[in-house]
Image (cartoon, rainbow, N blue to C red; front, top):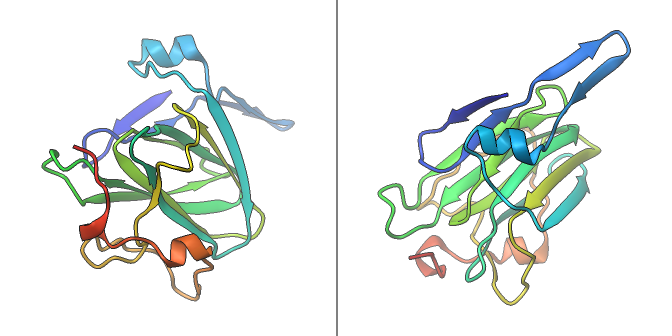
Length: 181
């Protein structure tokens, strides 16, 4: 597997080793021992799976307290996936990183605790999987405003009118969120 750091310390792009032939392919999406050997020593307690039509925008979600680290990937379709640094003590506070995850590129993205996370689906029938380091806690859940100008995420919205849940339409402005220390 290839593990690549991004411009903001913490998030990682993971490209698994893919074994393929005319019958299809095989890859390990998680192997505790192999990931630990690569310095990725995480414990997961919850797996989630969402399916979305093209143009669904989910996020930017985070929990504080009880932050979640998330190892995310797409098994059908494609997304523009985003992590936002929400650690006030970080020199990268308020900065974001985004990349395309798809069934075709088979990349995974590690979004560590202390970051907000969201994605925009780029194809109908997109299946998005994520492993979490802590359980979902509705009392700690927050939603950062997806289009807050202070963060300035460059969503690929050409020809797409984002579909948002009520919670995400009413996201909290960046200057009012309960950020991490």
